[in-house]
Amino acid sequence: MLVALDEGVKARSAGEVPIGACMVNDKGELLAAASNRTITDCDPTAHAEMVVLRMAAELVGNYRLAGTTIYSTIEPCAMCAGALVNARVKRLVYGADDERFGGVKTHFGIGLTDALNHRLEVESGVMADECRTLIQEFFRTKRLALDNKRSNL
Image (cartoon, rainbow, N blue to C red; front, side, top):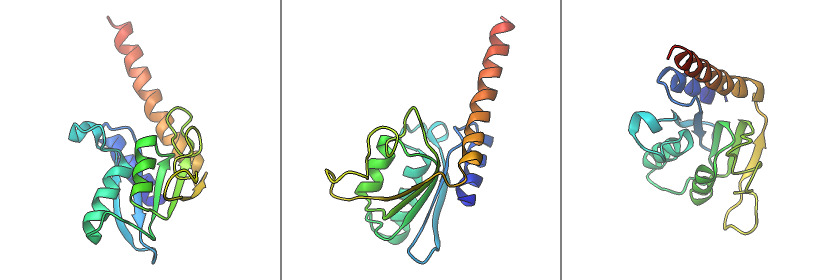
């Protein structure tokens, strides 16, 4: 999770929503690490988890990433959770729940239901306070900047 958090900090520095992710294989070897790149890449699908999936799939030469574990600072959205299922990721470990957009535990149960062809092992709450603080401080700073801009008009 420390690698994912570091990626989240990099995203914040780049002006992106500070979410980071990384993936390890079944031996615990790091396959990929990335942060959100939606603004940088002008790509609404460039969430940290999606970027990591693309990088890892290219590295191993297969879109199926069986036996892997992905770490994310925040609960994946529905798009990312669906991609984890399609990639056959074995395990998802994430920090903080996402009350607005969480697609795994919070809202849709993607990856947890027998209705899909693959289920994820899910562990949540790992370094949750640090992960939550990173994103909350980012949005608090954004809101303060916006309020200051409005008050100067």
